[in-house]
Image 1 (cartoon, rainbow, N blue to C red):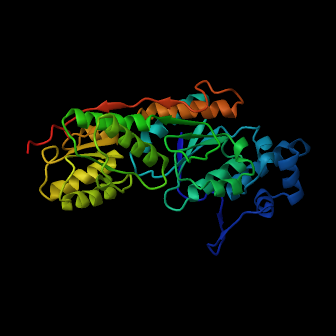
Image 2 (image 1 turned 45 degrees about the horizontal axis):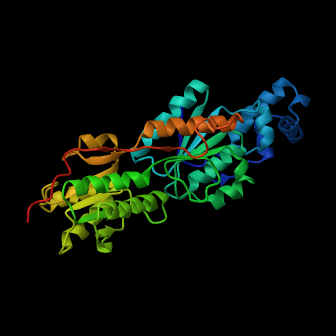
Image 3 (image 1 turned 30 degrees about the vertical axis):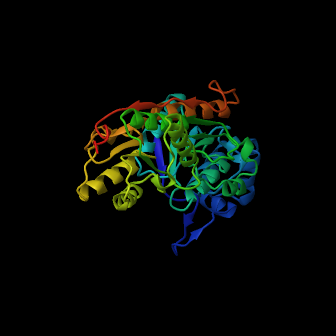
Length: 358
């Protein structure tokens, strides 16, 4: 079961439609018991009747009252749910990772709650609150630019919180992670283009400050060096992982006097935007410029031209992250180690070819 949380699930609406933080008094009023009974039910549940405990549990759910470790006792020490923080749920790249998480979580009796954090960072806040409230037992972080300071403010000891990062990760993230070989993938992309005969190879980067941007750029530079090709800084264009970034990069490429004959894009979405914009301007791929992406999302093989790309094992990323998180929740050692790295593969399609003879 996957639940998508778009907003903060802990606020309640008053009759005046104002958002307020629920209190223990709200819980008592909804449960029809005294605040003392609520307090006892949360801190010492054995001291109240089964009926009172059920009433308090239902009231906590209805009001969204954020309880602490006592809630875990009230819930028999386990919420049986995994939280996932994803930066952009509209990006199809994350769907397979989340599906992989669900494939492991479901059979183990865990639900999956997903929140987007790309707009305001609110998703990170929500998930810290979910954890503090005992509504999830841990979470998988897919956002490489998450605000760790905000998380630390909500959860006193982040190092003791069951957290696993997957795919993207903050460089100072104090938690286990599962990643792919981004540097090696970028090198494979450059090697493929060089083997086709390209000597003028450019790169559209991901967003500034993102670990994937850094590692793929490192791989790009290393790949050129390994192939004996120069690194031209004017061929490295700033970007993001989205369609718009590819479109903007295409306009820069179009105005260059000495254009790259091949472009390595930091994501498939970026490559789609680049190719589409060039097509509108009358350019053809791969005749005028070869393009290679990174990710191998589902539409890559159906795009025109079909996109050559670096394929990430996204389902396995999700599965492994879920297994690692369940190990942490259960207090077990990680079967895959603390920081496993998965291999990537080159998928050759129609968007790359030998450069046009001059």
